[in-house]
Length: 202
Image (cartoon, rainbow, N blue to C red):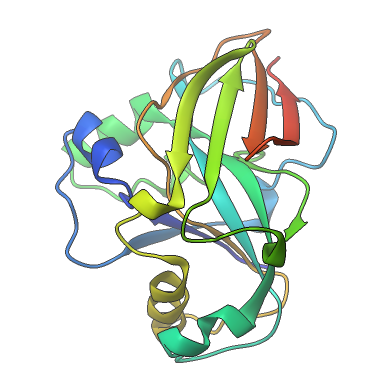
């Protein structure tokens, strides 16, 4: 099982981190050990002093695909969820400054939260609202209509390089509003008005 993450897919998020808006989808991988098991707390790692939350719609691949054409991409996933791409922002910044790869800032153990999955047919995927609450205060609000690259383009582009297999997860990018988490924070994710996950930070 692969965890594929799309970076800079919302222009306002790219701007808040002073990143260029990409001409094509930018993506990176997390290992399967990054997946936080359901109903488990997230423990702040000892190697970072600045862990950020990034809430993202997650697609679950439903069948093997390679060189998927955009018009057929909808046939390759049936379920969606909301997740968090936890990021060690201090480590990421240090590595970027040196021109080094920054996988360790994204792919560390338990850095990928994935909530309950829902049938995609319940929603308008081109106008899908989601949000992240921290301690019952909304910190991120997103809508898929604001994505630079929609789900079909993402699946098509990713499958040019990686064969997609059943069970692979694709994090589709985060909107503006990312920020630091602290011990005892409670993070709650929502798609429309459905609660998708709840994570306690330890």
